[in-house]
Length: 458
Ligand code: ARG
Image (cartoon, rainbow, N blue to C red; front, side):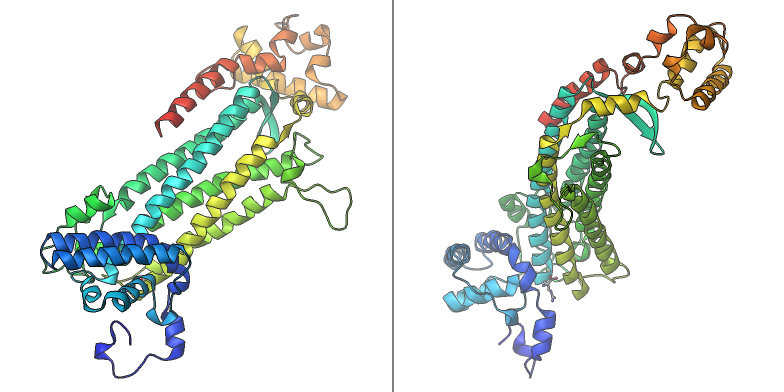
């Protein structure tokens, strides 16, 4: 018999049992469900809603059920629908009528909201620590590559020289924002919904704050209708995770490009690459590609939940059971991607010479030559045009700017002197960009120093 069977004169159809059941995916919240029930039962006893001895027996039995589940001694039933009723049913099977008192002043609607919030609070913390590990790796790689010059790109065309350290620190900023976004999302997840009942609160004199304190929540929800029908926190988390994956996918895209023969900037360690079953020579950056590919499923989960919640009238609707698989899949995916990506990055070989050679081509110092003339009094727009002509001349003659003799250079502007060669070296192009946020060694070192402080505070 169903826990809610009283009003029914027939059993549910077998297909409906299967269709309706969420136990196959919500069983992973068993720990949160039991912790929530423990806090609820304890409070019921303290507030005199049920006798204290009975509350104690419920708590003792729930703890035993938890231990049994962890030992793999419990089989959940599809008929019992979800994790909430499965555990309640086991409780009742062990202590009879006393077990039937647990659900006093509670509904599965506020219960599932509680469980999901507790579950996601833990996941947010874990994902944040995985992001922190990635951030630490980026700082370490940056520190080792402060003077490694490579071309920076716009439109995927060589633009101006930067350093590998500066490039890594760009990603440090992105994942740092992701960590802050998760902190923000955590705040809104960290609100305790029990006491909202099915939708309209409850008549029992429950101590909601005591339950929140017991479970480590910072606040209690402010409106019972909202509390049972709010999944904003899950949507926010999926948005945060989508942005994490978007960042990872951009990084992966670069690493795939960089490990091609065409770029040859990096080589993935053998332990983080795979081969081809037909082409003996192949070494593929599958890890980076797969992380890039998995971005789609996380975006998919976000769209799933936004769509599930769209147009739902207040308060709880069964549609909302569709939240869990999407959220769990996204959380699992991000938790799988981050550590493998971090290790791939840490073991990757940097091919400095190729990076430098690439920076030497493509006139990446053209802006600096224009700036050279500006420093000699030429207005920037005029200087831009002069150097544009100089670049065109070089392209037509198959030469780089440094290869031209002083007399040739002077034919473009008499202001050009011998000191031009030093002024436009790649090293100078980088070292002159020493404003905060720039690629010069001292600017990047400052960014790394601030980065370490940021990490120590999160
Ligand atoms: N399994 C349900 C869910 O995941 C729990 C809440 C069910 N509430 C209800 N009134 N049917 O959303």
